[in-house]
Length: 81
Image 1: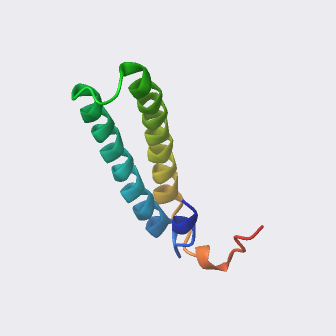
Image 2: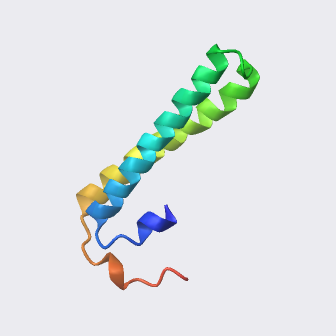
């Protein structure tokens, strides 16, 4: 997210986060495959799926907010604060 925050507009940041959300979905898919192939247990899988699904919802809400706000002057902030 820190890398995406440096995007010049909210739309660009939302696009960056959309890619991040897709990567999250890929990780969850791979974890589930590992479970079905018996590489990991249900106890190992469940906390990651729960956290990942919650993060996906949060990212989705944030992406929606960014697309609606459409701030276009993101490059003039000081990210070191």
